[in-house]
Length: 415
Ligand code: BGC
Image (cartoon, rainbow, N blue to C red; front, side):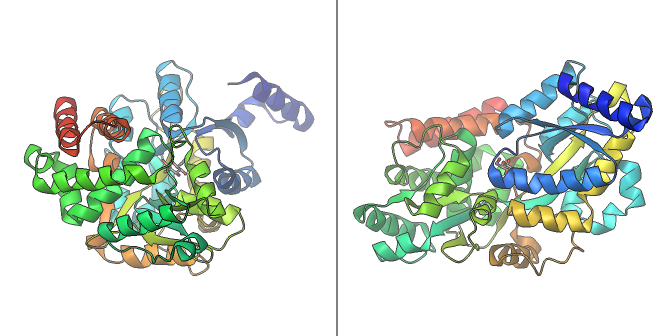
């Protein structure tokens, strides 16, 4: 635990006369990667609710999902875990449970009937050995396309519904002096755009089959060839300053109209909201062009370290889990975050029009797709997927055929 938090705890202790044990039992160190303006504002809703219930929150923000996940794991392995840490539910979290590093929140989940309140897909993914190992807080979609309406009008283009339409629109935007795509050049962001192309060109069954089987024939197929051709054709529409750019900087380019489109999860919508813009007004949302309708879900959750090797959650961990699923917190948090509530029974009529579109789409189970991690893709394969896509995207002289072959090989070596 950090020094300052110990001092703060001691000060509270002296002023209240509460015993150290009781105070410690209500303290949670929360490690997360929510460092953008909208992410911080959303998380503050959870913090306020946790503190209102007598919890003490020690905040440990670490920029970048990959960095934060690595830090959470390293701290656990080093015997100094953060008691609560952000993670997406899925295979990588199960790998931590396999190593006995996680506590479960099964008791609070059963007291609060999570099984009945969460969608079955999330129930399954958040459980390990029959018990919840994480508190799911939201559902984000990864295959969104945000756009600046004025930029589109200036170039005289409509919102594209297919990838050929997108290419034609991008050309016109370029001629009008507008950067067609605001891209944050980091491997995970490049993968998000790649997966939108994959879904758009291959369709939802192809996407689901590919990532659930990692089948060599599918990876070598003509459809995959077309995916790489299409992805490669986007390269000229991204500006030279893209490498290393953060996702929220790319969103800001779209908000200002410097760039026309961003392919990103709807956490970008959180930034749009934080900028005081009603989503769907000057900045619009649509699904990335695709041959059929689907929603690539990713679920943010908080997991709980096994403190002193204890399998059962501590009182502070259980309180945190409970707070995260409270209806008021689900509403307040998700309205700022850009996501939709993880709970099905929470009224979402006050959410923006893009959120309504997500909710309506998800009513049809055929649209349900999940981000790579959720399928049971091991972390080594997820890493190989990101690296290989990024390598292709950033290699000026790699042909789409070479890119496809490199992707196939990277997956087959890692699986
Ligand atoms: C998380 C989002 C987050 C985004 C950018 C994603 O992995 O699911 O909640 O806003 O990363 O930080």
